[in-house]
Structure formats: C-alpha cells, structure tokens
Length: 386
Image (tube, helix red, strand yellow):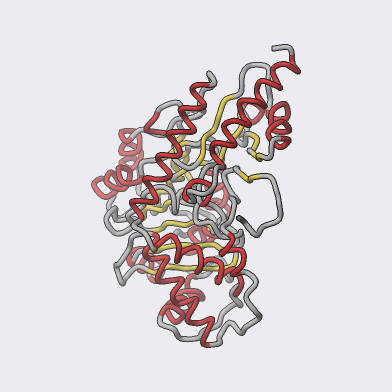
C-alpha cells in the first residue's frame, strides 16, 4: 500500500508517478553539500549514471546538475559548438524546433532535416545532408514526446561515423533514458542529455548528461570561451570528477535532497540488468498500442519501428478534441496530456507509460488507464452526438 496521499494517476510523458522510497528519500535531513555523507551519495550516484547509460569508458564523464532537461541543450550549445559553426538537427517534432532555437541563440547555424508528422528522416536523407557541408554536431531527439516518434540512435550514429566521423553525435534522451535502449560506448555516442522526472523516476529538477572523451576534447580545444557561465563545462567538469572520486568540491550548490532521490531510484534501476527494464517497457507498450487499435484509434507515429515504448500519441476520433476527453479521464482518476505539436495539437492526446507505472507488478496503472480511456471516449462521443 502506497504511503502517498490519494491522487489521480499521472500518466503523461513526464513527470511520472514516483516510487514511495524515492519520495521518502527527499525527506533526508539537512546536510552540507561538502559533508562526507553527501559526497559519498553524490559519488555513488554519478557511478550509477554510468551504468544507466551502459558506459564504462573512463574518458567519458557523467554530469548531474541542478536544472531541467532543457539545461542540457544550453550545455551543448554553449560548449560544444561555436558561433558560425553548423549543426544538423533531425526533426521528429516540437523538441527539434526548440533545440534548434537554443543552438541559434548561441550563434550556431542550425539546419533542420524535417520529416512529416509521425515520421523520422530516412538514413539516406541523413547521409546526403552530412555530405553537403561540414557539421560540428548532429542532434537527434530519441523520443519526441510531441509525436511519440522513436529515432534509431544506433543506425544514425553508424551513418555519422561512416560519412562524417568528426561530427559529434548528440542525443536528446529526456524521454528515453531508462526506458529505451542506449548503449553509450558501443554505439559511439558523444552526448546524451536527459532529465530526472521521466523514465528515471525522480522528481523534476536535475539535468543529467553523459559526455564522451571526444566531446570533452572538443570543448577543450575551443577557439573561443564557452558562451555561458552556469552551463560551462570548464566549471562543472572538475566538480563532477571530484565528487565521483569522493572528494568534496564546489562551484554551485547541488540540490542535496534531489540527489538523494536520484540515488534511490538509480539504485533500484541498476539492481537489475538494463535489458530487463527495456523489455518491461516494450511489453507494456505493446499492451497499450494493442488497446488503442482495439478502440479503432490510430497513433501519430503510424509505423511500428517509429513508435516509442514509454508513451503513445493517439489521434482522437473526428469531432473530438482533448478538452472533450481529458476531463472524463480525470473523473476516472487518470491524467493524460493534450497534444503538443503546434500543427495538430487539438487533434490528439498523449499517454505516458513508463517507470513504476509499468515496472512495479503491484500497480495496475496501465490497465486502469486503458479502461478509463475507453469509457471517456464513449462518454465524449455521446456528449457530442457522434
């Protein structure tokens, strides 16, 4: 039985439901960020981040910094690319537009390679784009939560290494880390940026990154200083290295309670093989997508190979909009999200199925949500005379 106050089940693409132990760890007593106990907790947390990304390369470095996942964009844009250099942004939805805007804010030239809504750029298109001009970085949104589209990071990285090996491969993994396979070392990725509040299962407030040795060397050989102070790798790299080696260090005060929560959830996640976690999310995804099909509904990401395993973007029946359906779900104790993609936001809803809602066998969140969706749709159609 959960110790949390009764509440509707949060099944959006993040933040997600939290495990009791994770929330309880936030109640840790006040302590100094340079005290031995916290230094040990933070050091262990950074080591577990390596396991989360399946990385054992000592040249790579994990970062855990106070901020949202969006801070990861700023870290990439202000440290790994310089004014006037080129970035290729693979577009599968809303978040590619935002990442491109962030890059342009720091003076980079961002070229977006766009796909139709619900699709992803082909490998042939990516290869052709890489041959047209030199790109300092390529960015890929692993799961774009505005569309539910899953990108094939392994294949994209293979294309980049073959065609433009000097280009840094940057993955926005905000809604993929902890639920979609990421093999940082094996796939030869340079950056994965993520956040604490999605499949990792920690409350919002932590920006989490993994940088390769290649990425760190790219930063060290910049011709100009980094264009941010708080996001500067120069300021954060020694801090992370020291904490991981159990040495107190200071640049900016870390959120001690959130780090405790992250330590708790990563301890749970890394206690089992990552392959098991990916399989559990895939199985839950199959159930959700089968139920969506049984209801006669279509997904925004129509091709199975393009579909994320921790969320599903669902086209609503003609004549219905999110405000017609979401209140019916809430009445039944379930919270879904409205559409986000600017062009079609009024035509679909989003169902997040990740973290404890699918990994805890004692929870029935997914079954409850499927039943609620069926009833809410029937109710909304009747109200509209459909």
